[in-house]
Image (cartoon, rainbow, N blue to C red; front, top):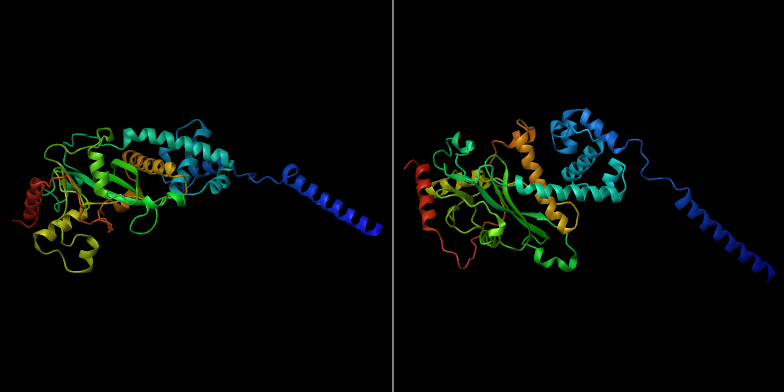
Length: 359
C-alpha cells in the first residue's frame, strides 16, 4: 500500500516537473521566432540597392518611385505594404520577411491602406474631366480613327473573389458558385482607372450597379460630356453616352480568332468594339470584406500612380498594344425597368458600323 502511494506521488512530481519545464521553455527561456539577422530594413535596402528586375518583382514598382526618403522606417512601412499588396501574402509571411510582429504588420498595413484610399479620391478620376482631346491610342490607330474619335473610355464590371463568413455568403454568390464582390470600373485608353466602385455583392447585375451609381449624385461618376461616350458591353443599358455592341451577334475576340473573321457591318462593329475594351484585376487575398474593398481601391490607385510617373514601365509595355477583351458571362441582355433605350446611341452605332465598312 505504501509502495503504491509512493509510486503515485512520484508520477505526480514527475508530471509537475515536466509542466514546469515546458512553461520555462515556452515563456521564460523561449526561442524567439522573429530573430533573423536579415531585418526588414536590411532586406528592403538590399532590394532597393540591387537588381532592377528583383525590385520590380518584390515590390511591383520601379526603384525611382521609392527612393529619396530619408526616413528608413517609413520606407520600410511602404515597402511592406507594396510587398503584401503585390503578392497577396498573408501576415505570417510578411512577419518572416520584415521581422516584425503580427500586430506591427497588421497595424501599419491598415494605416497605409487607409491613406492610399484617401489619396484615391484625387487619383481615380479623369485628368481632363472635359475629355477635350481624342485619346492618342485612337488618334494614332487607323482601325479606330475616325470611327471612334468621340469615345473616351470603357466601362465594365469585374468579379473579384471575396472572403465572407458562411452565414453572410448568400448575397455574394454569383453564377460561378463562389462569393465575389462585383466591382464597376471605368478605364481610359492609357490603361488608367478613372472611376472605380467596389463592394457590391457578387449576385448584383452590372446594370443594377451602373444605374444606381448614375442616380446617386454623391457617387461623383465622371459622366461623358455632350457628344462623347463610353464603350459598354451587353450587360449595360444603351442610354445616351454609353455605346453597346449589337446583340445576337458574335462579340468576343476569342470567338473571332477561333472561327471566321467578322462578316457584315454588325460583326465588324462588334469586333472593333470588343478590341477596345480591356480589363485589369486579380484575385483577392484573405482579409475582412471591408479591408478587401479598400484593397481593390488601393490597388487601382497604385496602378494609376505608376502609370502616370513611369515613362517606360516594362509591365505596361507588354500590354500596350493588347486591348483584347476577356470573355465572361456578364454579357446577358439586362432586364431593366424605368430606363428608356437611346435611339440616338442606336443611330450612332449604325453610323460607326457603316464607317468601319467604308459605306
